[in-house]
Length: 301
Image 1: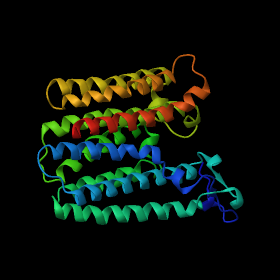
Image 2 (image 1 turned 60 degrees about the vertical axis):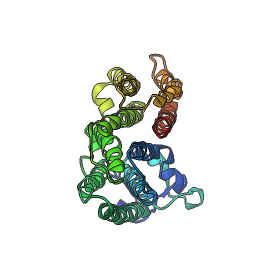
Image 3 (image 1 turned 45 degrees about the vertical axis):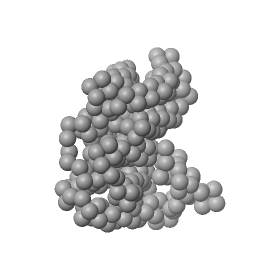
């Protein structure tokens, strides 16, 4: 059942929290850290163009921010998370529901313009990847069958916030794709998939009435086992790449993020409380920030 401000001319719904929270800044590491790492690998092979790096970062952040806005906009249309919205303007800090879609489109226009400039500066082959990223970012939440509602949320994030963004940040610096950057991008693929899966495990009970995420399809126990596997893969992949010389030895600094991974997994232990599960997303975001920044630092070092 769909219910929203758009379906009720008598009421306008406003976001209870601020614009900043609507953009979900803690999730933006999904774009920031792969770009830092991909650019770091490019720096090892030659000079890095600062303007290209900043443009790549801006375009990717615009697309991810727009995706976050679409997610809240369409979740409300699909009857979810209605507690985030209110008709009482005096208690709301954020925008009207109808304004969110315009903000998302504005961000995408900016991303497209920057993307065209990047293509001109590097290679036109990044345009199809950019178009696909925007399209799948929109379809993640939009339409009668959003990708996140049919168990494909982790797959979309795995693809576009792992290999795609990492490799594009490398290519726009004038490099040709190779096995090295493709392999390194996998660490970010496992990492972002673990964050999306964490969110879906936490929301299993809430999502059951609205959509079929991977967590609801697998069930809590199997979903937690998958999360454990993803977290292990983040570190085993990194260590194996260090052992083969694909990553520098300084990348061992990523092991400092292990306590956050352990704390994240502990949130879903067998006798975990609801409060523990709700805190899991916070630790997933912190883990992504910590591991991603440490890996980027290790590469740049």
